[in-house]
Image (cartoon, rainbow, N blue to C red):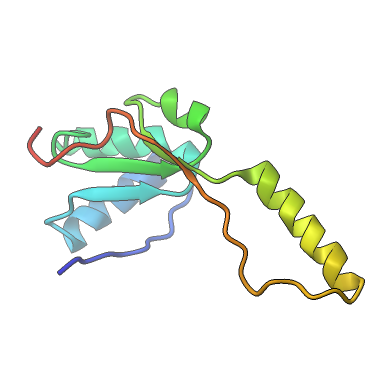
Length: 125
């Protein structure tokens, strides 16, 4: 089975190092990490490398952030970009409809954009 964990993490090098140490302690078979806080991308990669974990050789890393941020990382990071402008426009549209008494859908889906880069690979490559 797949084991997953969601860990809160502050910002900066020390916070990244602490969360990496916790991940490796709690999940020794860890093969992938998804980062949702873009300023942590480089500090996390650095912390893993300092502990002998290669990105992507031993660990795949994906970030939920704008593509330019992920591309400029220490290791170009595979990214999932949320269409922020469309998300905001859709939210305003739905709010206006709701305030005017018009029906609004229960769910609105917006497709994210996956950009594969060199931070993801099968383990050992």
